[in-house]
Image (cartoon, rainbow, N blue to C red; front, side, top):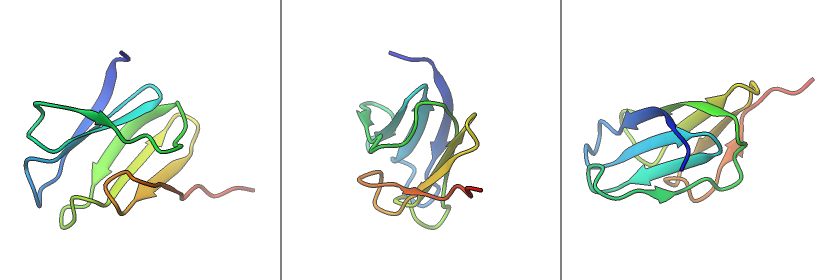
Length: 85
């Protein structure tokens, strides 16, 4: 397993947490007891994660590559928010 870079708590539901490690986004729905990958095609160079304070299913992740992604369904799918030139 890869080292965890960041962990974010969903303020709207404290049992839900998200974590990013090199190449993987993890989600816990039981306060951190168990974790599942919800990577869904995001890149491997992640180092930050933030959860919408009002919606535990809306999460933003980003990384060293300058790319940022958003999910509105708890990690089932991700949208690339990066600006490309």
